[in-house]
Image (cartoon, rainbow, N blue to C red; front, side, top):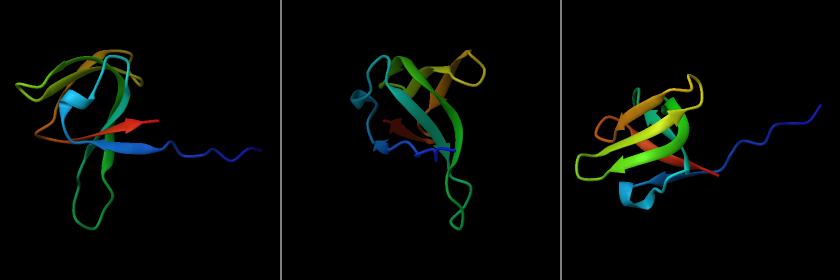
Length: 78
């Protein structure tokens, strides 16, 4: 059996760094003693830097979802 290698991730600090089609994760901090929890994962569809929102096509549900960057952190999945 092959061991699955975890994807390399890079923190996105500004929405301007994102482009349509980029694979990203949205993570929510649950406390100082815990790792961040991935709440959404998918490909970027549209960005609105002025209001801090990114729309993705969610991998799990297949639906378009909005991510508010005031509530979570964004990570590029490579």
